[in-house]
Image 1 (cartoon, rainbow, N blue to C red):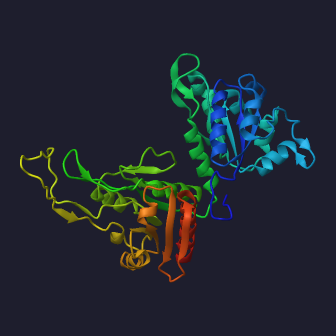
Image 2: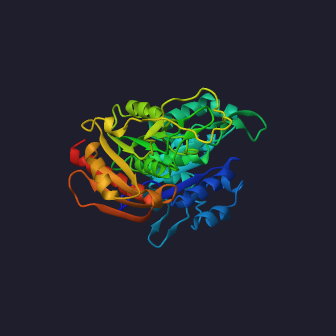
Image 3: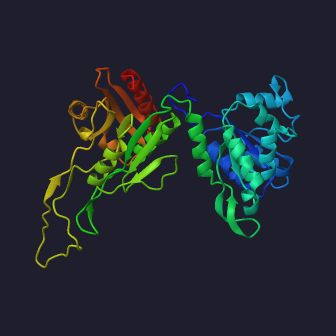
Length: 407
């Protein structure tokens, strides 16, 4: 799914959420809330068993839509019940999915609205089982899950932990972030970057002075994370190389953590093999201490000044072959922004550069930037835009650049 402005993913997607009769049904309310917060249009379908654990009103309040509990619901006006639900869905999620529901899916049993929707839909289906440990590992359940997977259903295996029975084992419903990550992958499967591999760097680097102190910068990594999100939503397989300023990452990425500029250089050089594009959003330190002390440096009596000798870090993106990978770089400047960015665009062999007003952008959740292109197109101004929206625009531009190169 791709929206007109180049955004994709969960925002604006119509999701049918099937809730079945297990104790984990209460967790579906949290999942629903997260889907709605992410911008999805959620329509809940509950089995009769599910209504014994959670009231339909809970999901009505969260989704602002009626909840379907019977196969005869939704037949009014131009709405044709399960037919309309199935046809209009961008994806169907069954969470939690009981062993009973999974068995019915295999057999194609239609005794409620969920069964009817699952048979009628052409949208991707994600199933997140939740049940007691031995039920999950029973040969019948494992065979049923394998059959569904063979049919193209996407199975999110349950997690290990404390179960409602009081035992510990496999059977806990997959965490909401895992389900959302899987949904984003499925929604992006038909996106403009489907089948592409994109490497994104995020955050600043830390250049060690001694085991305690380092040289760093104010980069939060927000832009890099937004770019990784946007690339996934466009269908790309994303490698995210994250510096230490980047916090917890929740997304379907191959995350590789680094500390210093040299660490990032090595990670990028490895990750770009077989990649289609590199988006270098990280704020890499230009210099590092020439010598790193193995022990914490001590203040010396009578010494008021400390002199650090610095050496230049490598220019990571300039060292990547532009004929093999389409490169997008960033320039954070405090003066003569466009002039400095234009020089970097040519010198580093970039297809596009994002010229950032460093003072207004670094550490902020909004962007003041200009896009400059190697092919001579007129620059594009991104002013006062959220980093998420700016990332969507940059990824849309990347899609065009790759198509123009015939990659």
